[in-house]
Image 1 (cartoon, rainbow, N blue to C red):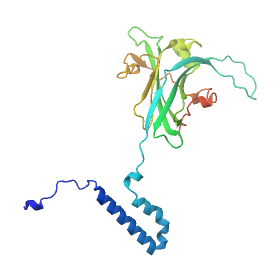
Image 2: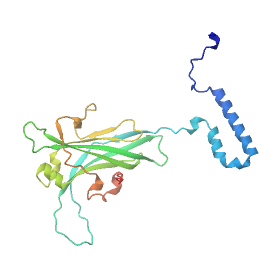
Image 3: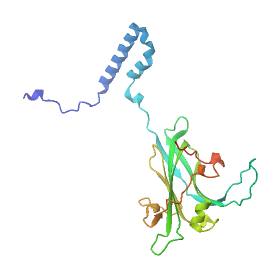
Image 4: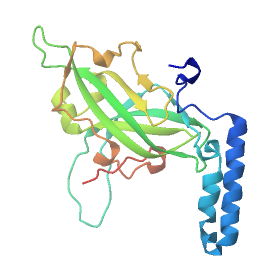
Length: 250
């Protein structure tokens, strides 16, 4: 085989050099201009012509990088709200709910033109004392909840929240009130498309390599549900304080 005709080892899909790119771009532009002059009916395709002649870099969208900041969670007892109406009066005694909330802030570069990112997910973890623990049983029960949010503002503080109902509190503590005192720890993880890294929050000292909610010493309690705000009577209260929850699609 003639060495001078040996096949090249250079990849066939290597990028074109800049002079050749400019030559091809000018050639395409001139060819399209001549075609449009000879065939005026093609004028409606001007947008497609410009698109074809544009360099690839002009068509590429910039990747948005998002930084999430989360404060330490806070939690407190809240009495069931009394909502007035024209349905008559009933005798009842409000019981206590337990609310968990975290202040969050999102920064994005480049910042979206409308000032929002589409979505954000929060995984909540709440550990409470296991009052029915027998010898050798885990001392704490772990409840989990993933909540999806939409219409997330950039460069603005907002709050996310989760709740325990009065019935769940009574199952955990044996009492209608003082659910806050049974809480051992509150934590979670926040992420969204383009996030540089997830943001974690915790009411306890947090080991990033092994968060406390991954401990095998906690007993998962799937039968004791955490709730999002829309699943509580607080749904229509403090609307502008909290991030919008994504509606469940049927």
